[in-house]
Image (cartoon, rainbow, N blue to C red):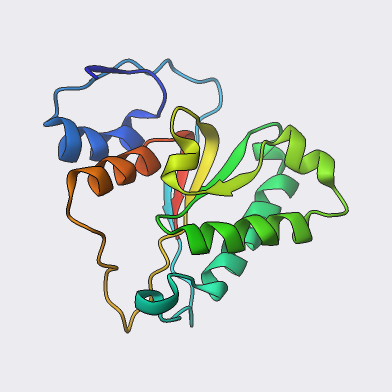
Amino acid sequence: LNEHFRSEPAIIAWSNKHFYGNRLRVLTPIWPRRFEPCMEVRVVDGADDDPAVSRTNELEARAVISELRSLIENPEYEGLTLGVISPFRQQADILQHMIHVEFADHPEWVRSRQIVASTADGFQGDERDVVFLSMVDGPSQGPLPLRDDDRSKKRFNVAASRARDQMWLV
């Protein structure tokens, strides 16, 4: 890969630096709708499950679902596709279940917005306008120990580069 056409330059900059040695030519078109900032960080107060054991964080998942609802109800995000990625299958499964429960009265939102939660593997070759990365992290755990092998790094790069317009790190 030597050219990138998907993401806002600020979103792909991290992957470009850490995975491509700043060799990517970022050729993303100027979108008519731009978000400032195009990257958001949300720290969820009290979200401190035991990710080393369960690889889930229910409070974090609830916060992601709440943010999804807020975006759906915000006219600025009208018509945009939405996705949620977690490095852990367990968290992605909880989030997907919560999406179906939360939006059961509005299945058309899930369809039209293409709302899905999955791991990076589930998003390989796919993209959304807005992506949430649910990292399953808590203050007593410190940063989650992601495996330091090539496959894990590639999967994280996929996760970090699926958003076109905006990425939320939770």
